[in-house]
Image (cartoon, one colour):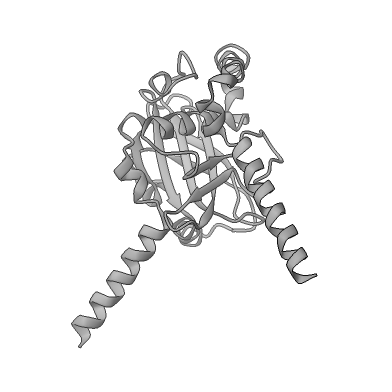
Amino acid sequence: QSSSQSSSSSSTSAAFAEALQATNLLNLLSSTRDSSWLRKWDRKMVRGLPRHSRDCMDMAGKLPLALKALDAGISPQELLVDSAQAGGLHSRGDGSLVASDGRAEGIEIKGAGLKRRKKRTFAFKGIRVRGTDWKHLFLLGREREPEGWSSASDVDGCIWLGYVGRDRYKQALRKAGRSEREPQDATVTPGSTRSWLGGAVEWVRLKDLTREWWDRKDPSVKSMCVETSIKAKKKIQK
């Protein structure tokens, strides 16, 4: 009976993993068979939504990140981005970052256009900690609206990518006296530390996203760095 239960559990896990990849935005973008899916979203993002309504759509952040990730050589096995607008298989987040050691950590993706009358300031809405398990927050701010949304070259010249780890985000909340229990809005400007979250964000222009930059977000790489640092400190103490 134990063997039967183990086999059933393995089959269920395999089926779920297959479903995650089937709904992974990177796989949908990679498949030539699903080009109609991309054309539909391209039309919707360019002409089917009022300019200031785009940020209500998860795709305002997910689509540019997935397009550029593929362009930078990041595979669907390393980054899973849920293609659902809401209530997808990654129910508590927007996907997963898979480390080189196989560990998966949740991600949250937010997109935003320019704040009114600002040249490079973005207002991200409703960032949640309570009820989530994300470890990595990606912020995609549009300096101008892309003319197309179907390739990395369409979007990477007008978008900034910001990154914040969960621990660093929570530290910024505490420092600003903000609650983890409520969704928070954050107005941030690349290169500025004036806002409550500004100093915690690592920025890169989307066109400058490289494999090397991405690999620094790998949880297993970070763990190795921490372990190396601890060992080095112990040697110094000796």
